[in-house]
Length: 267
Image (tube, rainbow, N blue to C red; front, top):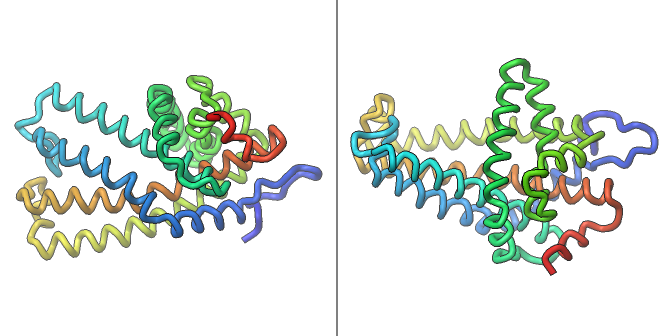
């Protein structure tokens, strides 16, 4: 695979998609336990909380009140986006040989959690509309907003992070689209494999039939919840690592100097 999915204009510094892919999977497999654990543990905790408040595989159960729905929804957003932010920052510090820097990563994620969530929802709606209209505009919008989370956790860009992402990705969006397409294919294949394994496990417990009708017994429902958390913890970190490495590379290209300067923000 070449370093970029599209020809680069003369004199333009290439993004280096091949290097980013290689580094992404190198970090992912070398520190798999870390990336898996920091997603799996909080994600599973929220899912079990949801079960305790009356949620089930088929949706909201009779025991779920409006207040419970609001609590679980808000907490799910906070956990999901905060964990992504921690993974993004950890990926960059690992790449720079500085280790995971877990505490600073959590600090940065929590400090920027409100803009991370709200801008994530805005970007998600825009990208969703883009995909509804045509797939290509949706992918282009994904590329435009691809580095908004690292812009928040490293530059403290706050609500200006979407604009910062648009600025950084300018001139490199088709390269990022190519990267996203590679990950989409990998995620689909991984999802099919994990789904097949999950179905086999649930079928062995007699829970799969209930899953089809939203009538799982509690043991099967707990098993389904754990398997869902495992699947998400395996897949999600790959995209977050890549986003962090793309951001670091774009900072080198657009702002000049070495990406090591990113760490000085927290000194």
